[in-house]
Length: 399
Ligand SMILES: Cc1cc2nc3c(=O)[nH]c(=O)nc-3n(C[C@H](O)[C@H](O)[C@H](O)COP(=O)(O)OP(=O)(O)OC[C@H]3O[C@@H](n4cnc5c(N)ncnc54)[C@H](O)[C@@H]3O)c2cc1C
Image (cartoon, rainbow, N blue to C red; front, side):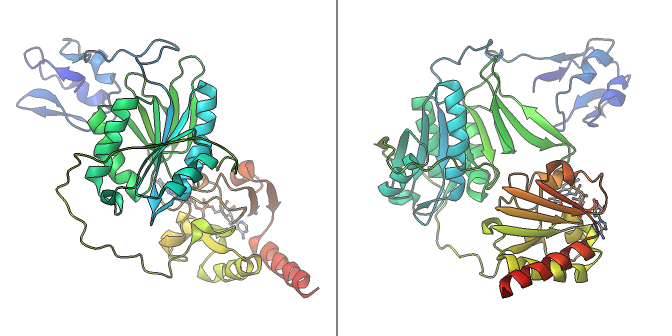
């Protein structure tokens, strides 16, 4: 805990309680006590007239000076998740993002692939990796946090990349925090943008914070590697180069242990909406006024060969199921065309669809924030515009 209260100096005046925006200081036996809710905003330090609240600097945690790299740490790594022996789409997206970061830093881009055949490692090279650390050991055939985190942490310790990216998927969310904990470094989950700070070379990790009301730029200036997870469909894939050459390094899966054993895996029930794979998403919001309003969106989506999504407002109203929710607490989509109907464009919605190739917004309020993000904006009533689009598409199909 970097902030401590000297109980001998604390007079129990409670001044610190009123300045803490997180209500993370409580009184215990007449003395102030900092709970686990502390966000280290440091407000309490100046509020204590007795000087009883102090920040403790951990040894070796000084930020790295501008441009200076932590000793020996270099390179950008992507943990390339695989499913049923195939590299997952998010791995290719992260290689696209990693390529840009590696280019700016002038370093190599590597991927780490467990539980998939060598051809998949070759595929990752075509998606941008210069090097792939690869193991197809049977221990990785089904996902298990312990061997995955043990080997990834060991490889990072050995090769010292300065940045590690992974998917914010059920797998990434499960074992990447273990890797960060093993390495004693930071982790920023669910990033929506990644950039390099030109002055310091630090990774700027952008993600929604405080319930999505602000976008926070998070740094990990004191520890390496800097680890970030990104949801599928947030980043764009880089170019695929059939002829690209790279190095595949076979790594040994020795001395890995586990307290758990996978007995069986059960496939997700079919029939789930494949919102994230659709090329066209026609999404509706509160402006649709009810479940009935969505009927025309289903019709439009069928004509366009796509599927239907919804804002959280529409989901909360029960007009569309949660499996169709787009946004921070729903799915992230990246279709070729995203048509937002009667959706205002709250930041929590935008983070789930902003990387779509073309965004069409239909809203009767010309000031709606969705228009700032839209490629094409139609100011109008959805109940007039959508039926017109349906009629036009039907005419085109008939012609
Ligand atoms: C922690 C947190 C997480 C959240 N996660 C998500 C999330 O994952 N996804 C998400 O979507 N939201 C999320 N939200 C909610 C978000 O803040 C907004 O409240 C929500 O996106 C609003 O949905 P909406 O745009 O459909 O509704 P509104 O904001 O009410 O907008 C309705 C829009 O419809 C327009 N309109 C009305 N009638 C018509 C008409 N006839 N024709 C054309 N336009 C019309 C209006 O002008 C308005 O712009 C989250 C919020 C929080 C705090």
